[in-house]
Length: 234
Length: 291
Image (cartoon, rainbow over the protein chains, first blue to last red):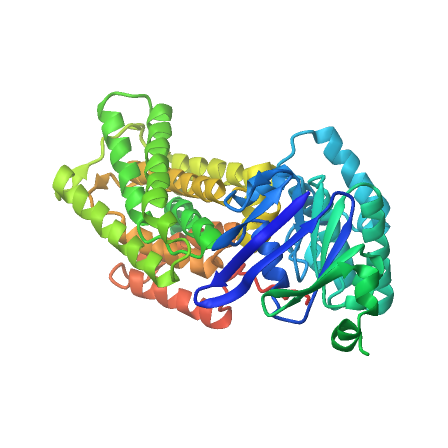
């Protein structure tokens, strides 16, 4: 579904990604783990078209998208739930969800999908007319995920959905991610919480200072000695 | 008391002009954090478009429409050729470009239209009417009415249309808006279009209110409207309306009760005092976001 080949990205003179290659098959949950500054968010931003790769290619369903504008990438079926949630704080929960469906014109379908999001996250239904900025951190993360679903993505990019959340909430969020995947969306998950990420993913890649240093099935990697030491706390 | 009411009436019509111009400053700033110094000159272009449209014998509604459409096209064109290429350059670069565009438009105006002031043809020759002890002129009522209608229209547009919602989203978080599939370029274009159309309308209304126009007429009102936008809280649409009205009121009240020589000094002084107590402006945003 998504194939990345030798992708290089730089911020000015700083090389953030030094030629990474990986692939995501339809229906899978794939995770990209690694420390702060390894280049995980850069990878997702480049896929979404917010950053341009210097070289390499990004192929989504057989189409080269590395030069496509971000709005086109969304309409092709890739949505991103960005790091730090990035909800629109001065707009209502409902408006945030509507903005997630910005490219769509099937108003009936949008209404149905809002109900679908509310069934994943009943808390959002209770607060639909509240300003998003007044939600708690966990609710904001729910809103960010719900908003990401509103474009009916084939592929959903999730950037650190567990960041700053209480352990119980993290479990909730990951349960929903699995459910979203079971309902048909392919997921590319970026996480620092390697334990959680490996527990739901099928395939995993380990990113270290702009390079993929390890890859394999999530099960393999969670037994790998190096990974255990560096990312799983022994 | 009647003198006071009279100045309030005068202030509201003048304030309408400032408010219409201030909206363009605040909308553009809210979205791309650019102080569009050429905005006052767009207002001048609106005044001259209206001038020629009236001389051509067009009816007033059409004059107003043309005076909004032409500046709107010009505003979009300026954004496209001058500001868009600098979108990712340091902010100061775009600011200097805006000053350059402003000087260009002013001098082009002097060259093409001559620097001499021209009397704005009077469309409404009906005598002013008495409202109690207060005298109200048709242009005053019309200026206030047109401004009010445009501001109500804008508020509905921003609140309830899809494009309006995208504009607000973009103003809060450009990257996140892009991730929603918002085409940033086209929304910025629409923002310049609307802001410039409002300034154009202000240009015609000022011609009718104070019938004297010249190529440099945009400098001072542009500056005052900018200050009004800052006092109202830059980036805030109701703030720009409020700031503009306040600016107009302070000006006319100072002229009426203190001295016309001190008008600008006292008006700006008062605004400085407001900013001392409320640095982000009266309706300025002071949102704390959760991390």
